[in-house]
Length: 173
Ligand code: S3P
Image (cartoon, rainbow, N blue to C red; front, side):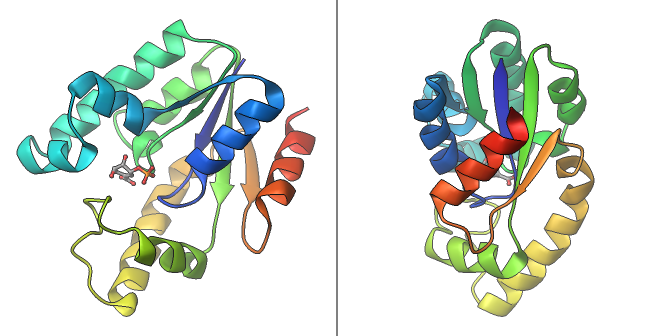
């Protein structure tokens, strides 16, 4: 089985994926880390030096590689992965895979992302809370059509990591 965590930037995909992998005794893989490893540079650098289109192609290539070759795995995707190149269909059609959308509200995402903008090339340049709120609102609206196709949705607002994991395991099994 492959469990695929999807959701907006800072929705907790990597943190919760690591916790879940220990609980279920599965391997854990973060797609951004995998890309950085394969491409031998950071995601921010790929955006800067090769551009977003190159990054989106690489994302699809490595996603396919993972879905075809791995099992007993939790994989956390990048926030944009399900929204490009028919990737959401690949995810839904993958054998023995279940997708989980970690849903977070706009204010929650703004608070979390304010602290860690610099690592994220899509929002690093946005200066005020107001502009970040506006950007995330529009972006999430566009992306929701993809995220909402996930097999399972777990809301993460006002919950501890333990509560989210409990909720997720209940919905999964
Ligand atoms: C992106 C999210 C990032 C990373 C890249 C683009 C996006 O991953 O893949 O900066 O388009 O939402 P996280 O969701 O792990 O921040």
